[in-house]
Amino acid sequence: MRRRTIFATAATAAAGSLLAACKDDPKDVAWSGPNASPSTSAAADDDPNAPTLTIAPAPGASVAPNEPVVVTAVNATLQTVTVLTGGKAVPGELDAEKTTWRSTSALQFGKTYQVTATGVDATGKALEQTATFTTLKPSGTASITFQANAMTGMKNGGTYGVGQVVIVKFSKSPSDKKAALAAIKVTSEPQVEGRWYWVDNRTAHYRPEKFWAKGTKVSVVAKLHGVHLGKKVYGAENESISFNIGPARIAVADNATHYMRVTVDGVLVKNIPISMGKNGYVTTADGGRVLFPTRSGTHVVMSRELEHRMTSASYGVTDPNNPNYYDDLIKLCCRISYSGEFVHAAPWSVWAQGKQNVSHGCINISSGNAQWFYDNFRLGDPVIVKGTGRPQLIGDSAGAVWDVAWSKMLPEA
Image (cartoon, rainbow, N blue to C red):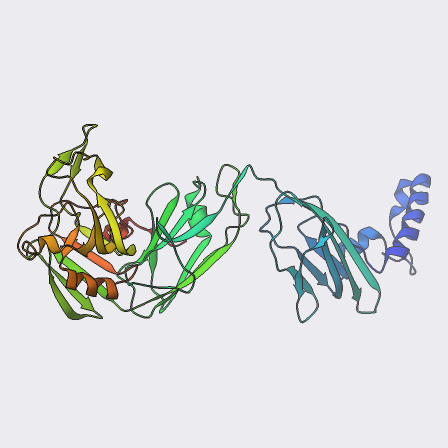
């Protein structure tokens, strides 16, 4: 980068003298005599104490838009810095010593930027430096969304249960998944270690080793803008979110006892008779099988609905004469899986609750217990199912990542 110094005028004159000397005799270029002065532009550039202004990115560079613009004064102070693209200025801040200016907002993709910096040296002489650089044009960009589960976005400032995981969904699958996760920082108060797990090519889940502690504050900052995610795809924008963890409401549905024990902050408050998914399956029209046993594993509440229409047509049973046919409006429903497992009111199966399983996969409880459960449980509250013999898979619920061995998860970068 060319630097301007207070020796500019003298340098020009000296350069002319050198040119004349070279024409006469190449051997006469060396300085000699008591009045000789090294005030050429080359000598100034070699002088580490010369007052200079430097600009990064370098002139002519093509950079990712997450690169900051930094102007630095050496043995001088800055007066003004202007960064323009298309007539629009990029904001920045000058430090207290007036020696460093740094941009404070992200650059845009595929733009040309002009930087002009002015300053003064210790004697008050003016300095000026300019540079032009460009930002790259990506083949594509990827954005992210924060989710409470695949059906519900996460609310900034919201309160969730101790089983709530951080879910980050990319609009495009990042081929460099390591770079994608390295750009996302999760912090909590109190601080605990957390790890990531890719549940599919676009979705990563983050959780601590054990359930969050009551009252924890969780913050997620994704500095993705300009990050190369592989194959010339770059992060589109920076995103952030924070949420709070509420009381530790945990339900454990045990197939061996046909009861669901509910604790709040470690205290047993309910022991609810239940009837879960019965043994067996139904064969659908396309020859597939739909199993009835409730999936064992860690679920979390994903939605709450006063009424939800449930129909066997959702898995291919449409004949009213089929003993597994149903089409009903069910009350007080708390969803715990994507496939349609709920904790809900089932007054028709009270006779079986606490004794045997008769449902098609849901956790049946009485209307009174369902009202209490609906009134008290919130998104992210764990519902742990034990002993049904049918384990849930990673994509079955938003809580399934709790069943992944800690050793198989990816530590934060």
